[in-house]
Image 1 (tube, each protein chain N blue to C red):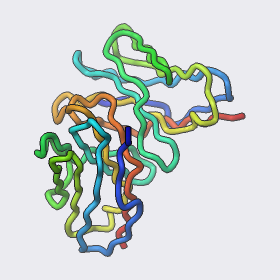
Image 2: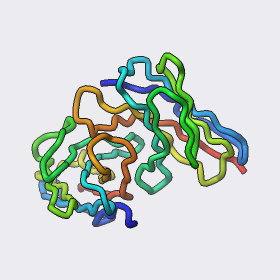
Image 3: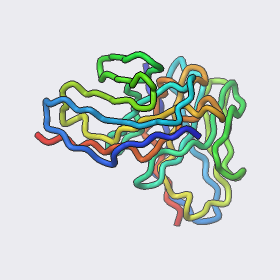
Image 4: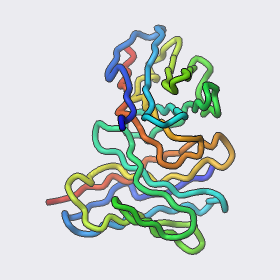
Length: 112
Length: 113
């Protein structure tokens, strides 16, 4: 199974940009990189996904390395509501297409 | 547009009992996936249902089973409960099986004593 590696935790100050890294050296050519986040006492929430090119949406930006072995989720201005566990996920290449393989994620703390 | 609704929110069962958890998918979604999340861990894939049939299964024993109904809602059944089954059970719906843009419910917290 393709796997991702993320730092256990990160801290940010409110209204500053946050760069959350993810390594996925065994990614296959057809794997999409997905990011979800989980706020306390809630289910995971979709943030963004991409294949090769950088992607932007209203929540965040996703920067994908040219060799696709790493990616970075960018929150342009962190708010206290962005404090959550962020998961970088690859779609399971060998099993069910619906299988999102979650790791432990990065716990982001945002200081006022 | 309603999101994913799970019931009940909390449940306490005794070891050896059986439990049924329910999930109503988001309007317009036809695929439901179930995940188990132990404390401090990321969610683990249990199985997915598409067009009322199982469309893939994670590393869970057969005592974990499910159903999907014509209105795309779903049930997760667990027989012969064990203490290690205590976890947050999450349901996610999507349109199609591709795995992008899942909408998760807030989960059912199951405690087995």
